[in-house]
Image (cartoon, rainbow, N blue to C red):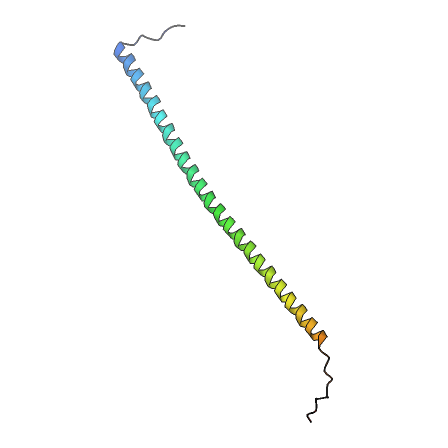
Length: 102
């Protein structure tokens, strides 16, 4: 292989410095991009955690409402059963016959 024209020491140093500067700039850009991606990842994680907290709170509220609804339904059924049992124990009134006062 034939070598290109030899560079003077000043030209070689200048080219090396330019190459070093390009590598250093590329490294800084990579660090900046990594920091930006990390910031976005943290923001997404915080958003996800907030949404998870909201979902869990809603599920807890829904479960509480379902328990209250079931308790109200049970209480209504018990009250209806008590009314029905009370109606069976009383004699039926005959229409048209009023008690006479003496």
